[in-house]
Image 1 (cartoon, rainbow, N blue to C red):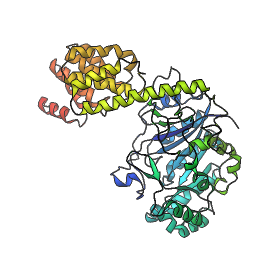
Image 2 (image 1 turned 180 degrees about the horizontal axis):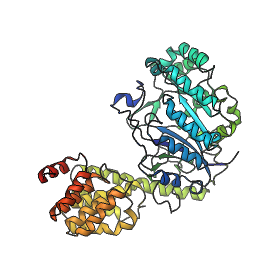
Image 3 (image 1 turned 45 degrees about the vertical axis):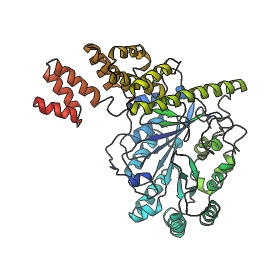
Image 4 (image 1 turned 135 degrees about the vertical axis):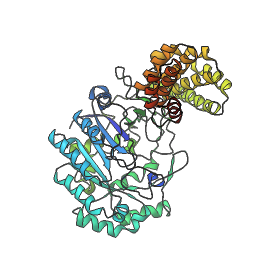
Length: 509
């Protein structure tokens, strides 16, 4: 068994889901279910380079889950296959309805001899599958994976409706899935801040747990049921050994409940990897995701149990030993722990970064309320500190400052931001605001250059910053210069952007 250096909980954005479960947020909004959509904003080659063994310090266990159905985007399978080819272990969370995508993934893994690093975790949304008459095709897809010798599990989030349908679920598993034992998880309730406040059930926590145990026997349920008893405010290496990665946008964050040291993971690949542990600053009331316990992220304090004690449980019997061990790796054995002095230094740095990011967040209210003079004065003071130009809040603050100066018509003062070019030109929003500043100062060639650079950037915070907004301003410039042909070309590149459509109508294009 090779050592696991990192665990990445990876998310991709989808265009909806093939199901519409009543307990899912996607069921409450309109979603397209577009199988022609692409999840990745960066080229796959860039994503894989960012996740190379060399950059991560060794082999990683990477979980891929969508905000809808994971396999819905066209590039979901190429992403998973690419990560497997990099030598990583990959777990895919899927609702099991897209048989063609599942077969495509398994066939690619078979062809390149990568099956021994792949784990497919099927979520059993039984009630929705039953309602849509999809239980037969779901079973076919699960059994296909089993026949191909790929590691898999079948999991269920045990809502109240599933307790009431327990007999039908057991019959389905017995007759269609050859008696497979389900991996059971609990439902969760969240407050408006996103913090987990308890169990999402009409029953009390005690009664809910008792009913789940009566209906479904699951070692995993017992494993996660006592997470509230663990002290998650001891020094935690989430963010350093394990972290969140949005594979669509490239944004890194520390864990499910802590964004903290947030930056774009797919930029600055030539520089040293930047990760930062949560330390003692977890904002969650308890480690409800359970990764600290699974991966020994709080060494000696989180109740880590060796994976061999879980591997023999019935719900894990179709997971190969190496794959299972990779998902429960003791990361304290493969990563360096901080000294007490380093922990203290980290604490001070975290407090300072938190202060700066909170100040920037508070200033945003002045910006949104149109108090540009107050915002610009306070932002300028904040920007005089030694902020890390790779952190998201520092990028946003700089960009907002530029737009505030534009609103105040202090265009010459805005040229000060040109000194940030080397640090920030990787961001489309910065290129966009600098293009406007140059344009207002009559420096047209430089404005054109920055707008063009904005269209080439993948890292964009605001919608349109790397597409229709710079294209529109290029159209305006060329129209003012009397070059109507070029103006029309750029206006057309804006798509349905209304101001561009109006200019095209005026020009008769």
